[in-house]
Image 1 (cartoon, one colour):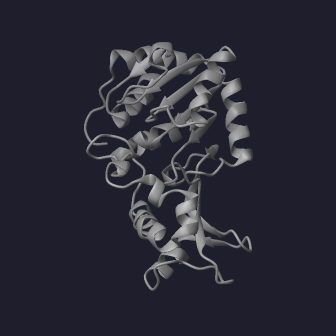
Image 2: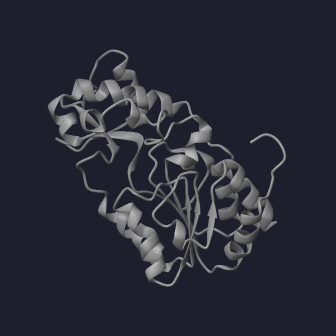
Length: 253
């Protein structure tokens, strides 16, 4: 992010809580990637689902019934996400982790930006665009090979001849059990769960703040839209997510 980092009163109040917490876990949603040029899903006028019905292009049944239509959407999404780079918010979380102030990042995002930024302890609960898999034989294929296939064909195929599916959690699918279990354990042990760029409405990930609160931890929220946990948060930052996290990093010194 260009320009001087401005630290708000809310950031100044959150910084000592982050520094004093024994365990800080971060939960991120689509909003953290918006400054990287990736639209979120539900913002009126700009959200991805404003222009396309997710049940038609992002449901496991849609992939099974019409893989060509499914990949007409996901092929473009793979290409778009592949060109994006982490922003200052991702970088701030990496630095907080490097300083020992953040234990892990749980993300709902599939865009790999936390990976590219350098986050070490990362739980991608909705999978990622890094690979695609064949549900028939179990083979896994790198996204670069899938994109190369899409230049020649409407549907990328496994070597066995069956359509490939992105290794992301589609509507109608369960989250990977191991990832969800790890995220749950982290939420249980967190003294502070910092929720960044998430509406906290998509379950089962949306239950993580409640788990932290139930186990005696605190929740802080950095996002521009309302969430169901706003009244329960010890800090509620509603500014630009990149500026807020860069400000938080500056405030912890």
